[in-house]
Amino acid sequence: MKKNYFWSPHIDPQVATLKSVSNSLNSLTRYEKKTKNFLINVFGEWDKHNFLNVNKIDLTSNKNLKDKKYKGFINSRFLYLMIFFSSYFPLKKILIKNKPDFLIVHLITSIPILLFIFNKFKTKLILRISGYPKLNFFRFCLWKIASAKIKYVVCPTEETKSFLLKKKIFDKEQVIFIPDPILDIKKISILKKEKLETKFEKPFFLSVGRFTKQKNHIFLINFFSKNLQYLENYKLVIIGQGELEKDYYKIIKNKKLENKIQILGYKKNIFKYLYNAKCVISCSLWEDPGFIMIESACVGTPIISSDCPSGPKEFIGKNENGFIFNSNDEASFKKALDAFIVSSKDSINKKLINAKKRSKLYTCFYNSKKLSNIINEN
Image (cartoon, rainbow, N blue to C red; front, top):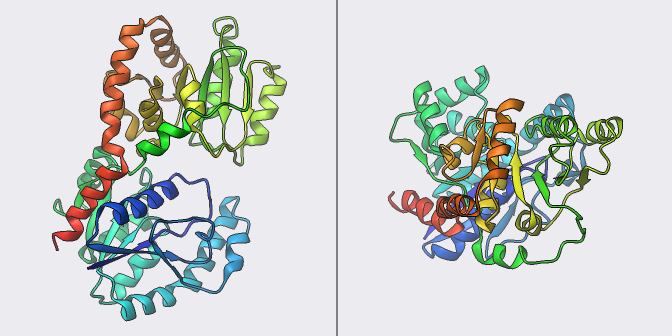
């Protein structure tokens, strides 16, 4: 029986990758009986997460790390260093002693990659690209040096796969496209039918995501402020939390948009909001692949998305599965919104059917089968 160890330490509990890791672990355990899966719980960051027959391995005794403040560039980098020095040698010890068949790494990957550069393990390393990769000089050099020690590089989109191949960091045989395990269909079918806590007097457009520069919610807020009459029959609801929350409220107050734009905090069940929205809007500057977009397709809600790298363009195509606009371009966004508003019911339904078919690539079952293929072929 193959032993798979998963590595994904995190300092931000809102990162979408956590859902991907959880779903991947649970689905692989459920559908692939020839493997035994373990999650490395580096500093207690996974304590509150429950898994199906998955063993957690507590790596360090420094549980105080999970209570450290990570906001801001300097604080987050300091915390990364603390995680590095507290986990490097304990991880090395576990790999030597337990000899797992595979170590699948998702976040803060520099630690295991450096270990594999300087040591020889019987374990095979799988690098899972989480989010659109920012290929700075350090990461480029690290990946290039470690390429011979990495068995596979798993990409969440074809565009990311092509991007890495063009950079000639890894061999063609190493780089594989496996869609993220975003959708648990049975669970979603139940959650989407729950009643909303909030009653909305008008149909609402919905935007979901962390309140960060990446999600670009300010673009959407500014667009609504300039087009109040045009959008008088609609409301904008933004769900999430993050470091820009105060900025959002300040802009909304200064522009007197309190009755037009409503900000809701973190919601455990996002699917009931997706299901009841008129449409879901993503103005992100980058996504890979774009969880909310795929979840919207699953519940049957139309999608309007920017063409940012790299997931949305691949998922929506040339407007076959939704409506796409040029990133950060108000004129292009208005054109896409116009197209949505005037589209016939039949035209919308056709896009929804196409999107739902495409979303099946992102089910937990599909992911487990693809991951099983590369694990069991060795």
